[in-house]
Amino acid sequence: MTSLTQVKQYGLYVNGEWETTAEKMEVLNKYTQQPAAEISVATKDDVNKAVASAKEALKNTFSPYERYEVLMKAAELLLSRQEEFAKILATEVGKSIRESRGEVERAATTLQISAEEAKRIHGEGVPVESAQGSESRMAFTVKVPVGVVAAITPFNVPINLVCHKLGPAIAAGNSVVLKPAEVTPICALKLAELMEEAGLPKGRLQVLTGDGAEIGEWLLENQEVNMFTFTGSPRVGELIRSKAGLRKVSLELGNNSATVVHKDADLEKAASLISQKSFNNAGQVCISVQRIYVHTNIYTAFVNKLKEKTEKLVVGNPMDEQTDIGPMIRLKEAERVEEWVKEAVEEGAKIELGGKRDGAFYLPTILTNVNDEMKVCRQEVFGPVVAIAQYDEIDEVISKVNDSDYGLQAGLFTNDLQFAMKAAREIEVGGLIVNDASAYRVDHMPYGGVKKSGNGKEGPKYAIEEMTEERIIVLNL
Ligand code: NAD
Image (cartoon, rainbow, N blue to C red; front, side, top):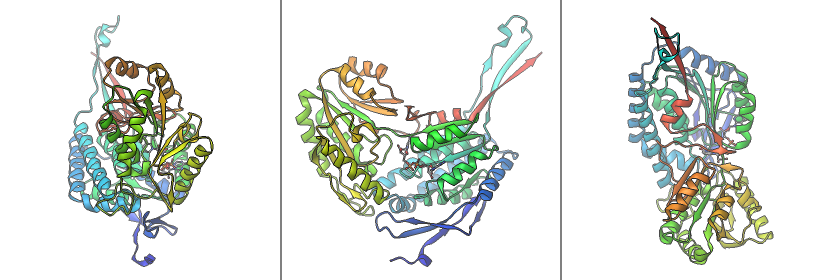
């Protein structure tokens, strides 16, 4: 067993300084279940100090070009340390090393896109002179930073989703108080070191670690925080929305993503993309495919093909190059998924593949004979389980996809343009992906959901809209 003395310790990052606190928390290696690091637990005073530092930093000039340079440099540094960061992700998340490398590369891209956007933030001319009595006036708008942004992030994509908040917030001229997930905070702490090296001025970023509910509550109580940007569960998202009062809130929440495979689809392509995009990170991805609706004509052929592809996925040590799928984030999450599958089977579902747990590992699982009321369909599984159902009619499947509390993204495999365009108009989601699964994302596209999947968009250009205020300047000439 690794002794605590060998485990790296991390402090809080406040006003450009690292501060250790009396109380500590362990971060586990998710594969070995041994301690990987020890982090500081922030107190209410630490939270208030972090917010005050963030506010103070706003007084110093930090021009768009300087923001561009810092973010570009940070992207470059991150890429040069891709392997180091990938190993951290594989350790603290349990994500396969190959997928972890991909996440680090995307995080660097997110910083780069944010840097580019820093130079493009602009208002517009407003023709006030066209109003009667305003003939001698002119007006334009400028985009000003919202101020102090509290960013709260989840465990599953812990560096790219931090960059999706930090990049745009810094690009827009804000200061950030970041609260990463308690089970995966190391990459965010390392990123703070890297941002400092890239030249980020003191106070523009603070990283607070510790208990999410406590820190969240203290941030919400502190009226100097101007905006909350949150990615995580709908339960916590609703809580933040209810306590933030009149302040800006941007919420990226859960989903039980549907993907439709129509009778004219390229089955080989559909099965291949769906098997990749259902089980990545052990299904712990907010747009991971969960509900699959397959046209009756091709149902059996599709189920067989998906089984064939999914059987080939390698489950094991995230550090092994061959591994596709590592453990889930916690033993109790794997136990919960096991319970939900068991319940579905008791209600009539058939396990086509998987359906077994080994400690925190849950095998990639395909269920058929499901109905929409089963937990594995109705709620967010957030694990490596897909549920396949059949449909006959286009209207029927659109209404099945929409029969969900969530609406983040959906996928549709078809070459029928009429169906694709009908779906584009009628499926209630933030994004419809045609001829790919629901889990397609590149980092500069607008990303965010409707219904219980939240509101507000990410993607640096769109997040900057959320993280700035438009101010009008009227000149009486
Ligand atoms: P979570 O809601 O448990 O935690 C998210 C963050 O909130 C963590 O940093 C946690 O410490 C903090 N937190 C916990 N209680 C809090 C409180 N009372 N006040 C303020 N902050 C609090 O979510 P998770 O388990 O880390 O992540 C899984 C969820 O995130 C899933 O529902 C998933 O769909 C969602 N998610 C959504 C997106 C998206 O872009 N829409 C992306 C990734 C994950």
